[in-house]
Length: 251
Image (tube, rainbow, N blue to C red; front, side, top):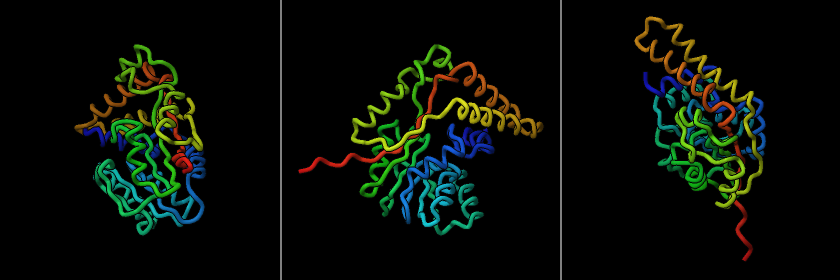
């Protein structure tokens, strides 16, 4: 079973592929989206859930979503077509880091996709290249709630993989970005996400006892659950920042 297939199953009941509740997503989009008509770009859009939620909040929105998984983009297109939004949302199966558009965007989203760009600051640089004047970036990424211990490192993380929250924000500001809003995912949001992730994969395995991938799916659920509960739970945090470029100094 391919890793992307496992991820698709894991997010069946939690289509926002990040530890964010529906209320948090609503609040973040309400803060981030400008009034009236606007253009939105989602770099690493996955199943297109953020695009659909944004369109629901701002019917005049024009949006593009980019993801390098053709199967995920195909599923997103089906969801967009079911919602009757094919004229408003365009989806692109390509590397988000290589995406080129004739448009500039009022809001660029990248939630939990910094790995596609090589880290937090390269993600911001890529988003900046697509922004309209006075546009904003909505960026979601991990940080250390506390210094990682041996159990967290044994779960597959590196100590220098992330910084603490204050240092993360300091790095962003040092690149010329001004935080306009932020949301730190709660423990409840994390737990809901992880129980949903592991439970959805385990449910699939139980529902398909004769499938060749049954054992691999159950192993994936068990390994992820163990890494979370015995490793990074309470140590790994997630912050979503609404950012805007600082005004250039007056001449």
